[in-house]
Picture (tube, rainbow, N blue to C red):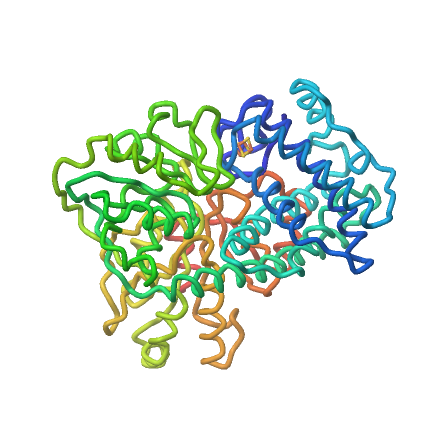
Amino acid sequence: MFCQQCEQTAKGIACTTMGVCGKKEEVADLQDLLIHAVQGLCLYSDAARKKGITDPATSLFICEAIFSTLTNVNFDPERFVALINKTVELREAMKAKSGADFNVPAATFTPAADFQGLVEQGKAHSLNTDENEDIKSLKHITLFGLKGVAAYADHARILGQEDDAVYAYIDEAMATILRDDVQLDELVALALKCGEANLKAMELLDSGNTGKYGHPVPTEVPLGAKKGKAILVSGHDLQDLELILKQSEGKGINVYTHGEMLPCHGYPELKKYDHFYGHYGTAWQNQKKEFAEFPGAVVMTTNCIQDPKAYMDSIFTSGLVGWPGVTHLGDKDFSPAIDKALAMDGFSEDTDKGSVMVGFARNAVLGVADKVIEAVKNKDIRHFFLVGGCDGAKTGRNYYTEFVEQIPTDCMVLTLACGKFRFFDKKLGDIGGIPRLLDIGQCNDAYSAIQIAVALAGAFDCDVNDLPLSMVLSWYEQKAVAILLTLLHLGIKDIRLGPSLPAFITPNVLNVLVENFNIMPISTPEEDLKAILG
Ligand code: SF4
């Protein structure tokens, strides 16, 4: 086992015996074999595409297979066995369609007939290859960024949005990183192209979310509880939440969001449900304590699941999420979770824990753009800080809380993704009636933040890099890698990144990023604020 795809990787180097996330060695080996198999499928899909042959169903499967290997998505080995066998089946079909014939292991291997044989095959295709460290680093950056692209493309497809350009990039990139002869400059270009593909995937997802559920509007969300039966919905999948709201309507159950589902309260077509009550808990890494205390059923719709052994009978998975022994609701019938919620105690009384505001996505923010621009021109707003990204367990992440606390009162704070739980309930006041803390949404809504920045740059007739805007980002898993590559593809400079730099970036590759984009690690809130504001 060799896994270094996320920020909490063991000793800041790699998980080699068991994942810090809870991933067992056999699951890591099967994930590596699945990626190897998908590379073979992509070789043929890429070749077919060059002949004008595409197959959207196969492309969607490729996204789902890759998304399954993202951190904290699927820990169930049996599901990987099925995915590996299906990948090879599709590879052979695509080989026949393409007329191509590749004589490389990914394109020819036959899955072992038994479980242990597959695990052994996976070990032979570890990501810890013995090639040049910088080549390996750039291949890993691209592969991990690709996992984020696959996740966004899958989310978008669920909402009826897809674009073959995204699928074409995935095929091309998976085929390219298989090559032994690929050169450094080719890989740098491929990684930046990953950012471009991700921008497209995020745009599709934005269209899916806003097209189906309307543009988010500013909405107050209670953090306490309402007496009665309860279901908690975690993850990122808006359609799963909608289905749960529909299927539980009229049953006397209140539906709560957890983690990255918080921004869903701002969508008109979701907030219209009377029993869509409030938000429970904080970021993903606190779920073991928070879920154990929740007196109702929990549904995990996407990443990020952790070992649920203390509440195995009240947690359910959906979509690509999996944990051995947890009931998987693969057919979008959420009645087992609803029945479980009805059988559990629910909250015994109302509790008031205050509230937060959500719903400041691009439409809401740009709706008051005139006020914002005037406030900047009048010097009422000195600077914008985008403080966003993933949360995680490391103590160094307190930086983000302290950073926001120390931002002067004439500056705005834009945020998105679960990193906001470090400061989401702070009362930062307003500037001329505009709240100082604006929650743009999930990590899936990074497109919205980019659109706000681009619109502001247009209004001030300058480049995004010349705006009074600083990005102070936190990363944890591979969607964050994809978003970072998108920002680099757009030419955004001076990004501060923490809490630590990725283990898969070598000093030479980091130098390329520093020289071209002036990307830098976070230091201390005091030093960074001084450097930015002077
Ligand atoms: S996903 Fe992260 S924590 Fe899990 S095994 Fe890989 S590097 Fe380790």
